[in-house]
Figure 1 (cartoon, rainbow, N blue to C red):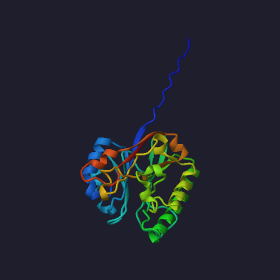
Figure 2 (cartoon, rainbow, N blue to C red):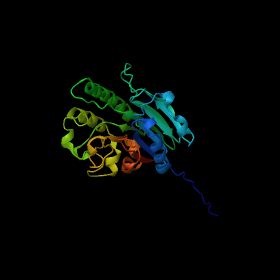
Figure 3 (cartoon, rainbow, N blue to C red):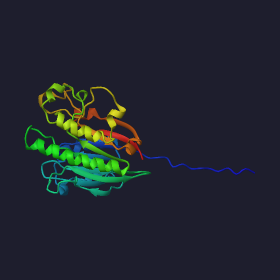
Figure 4 (cartoon, rainbow, N blue to C red):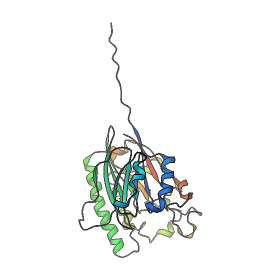
Length: 273
């Protein structure tokens, strides 16, 4: 008699993780909840919530099954994460400057077969240039580089995502001539971004999509949305171990035409964890 051995393989879980600069949680509650019901993301990294942590409407998300972590600030900035999976080891500061009181960073870990370290960021805009705001942007990016290097050195699945306020390449803007002197496209800004990519990060969107015409932000001014005069400034950057888990990456462009939209739209990835 030949014994037959049956092996059971545990299937990996596919999680949908979105990044969304919502430009004010109070103004965007209805639109955000509509999108959540439609898109059904497992995790959402939000930027520019413009709310102190205590007044962030956590109950809205907890009532539909999300865990919530917030790093808020009155009237400006602010980041939050909502997740169907438990959020572990939450960190609210980008290392490197203990005097920086702007709420632009939030880290947490989710666990499936793999533990995924998630870094949610709202990188400074930097305008006008030259000036102290641009100096702050570059200093912040120097700190971001070091954190990015530490994540690479850990050799663990991790990503950094959010509103980077960086236009990586000319094809990431409908009219790049309009951005030549802007902090989002200045050579120094792009050089700092490239240094991070060159550590070994994968731009998730470009790994799955090619060509021009792919934007995540349209200014409220001068009819930018109607003319599709957009830029791609919201990004997912994945460590090599995280890139191995990448299944898809898309931008939900249609959200921009909804009621009381943000000037950004969600970008999302699917990871097999």
